[in-house]
Image (cartoon, rainbow, N blue to C red; front, side):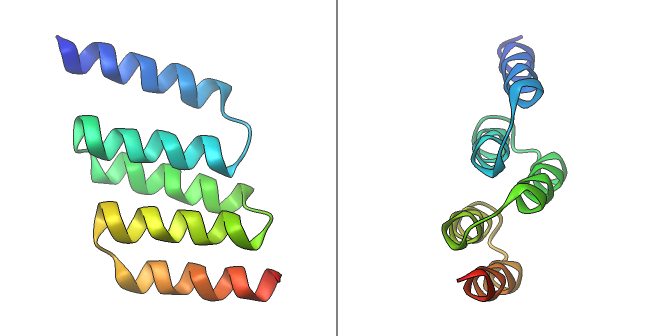
Length: 85
């Protein structure tokens, strides 16, 4: 029952999401609270689509490395972020 409530809260946050930060934080919550890596990956991709600045990419990369353990994807994002500098 608790996970259903958490999922509903996250879905509300996603509906209101406007920028890469919002999507990244939702993905972080999904991993932490629900353990759903596939859903989190989809939201990290939305965060990447909304990313505009170097720090957007670096924060997403940090989350991906920390929460998914995907160092290669994180490295790609760090590099992409540097290209925005």
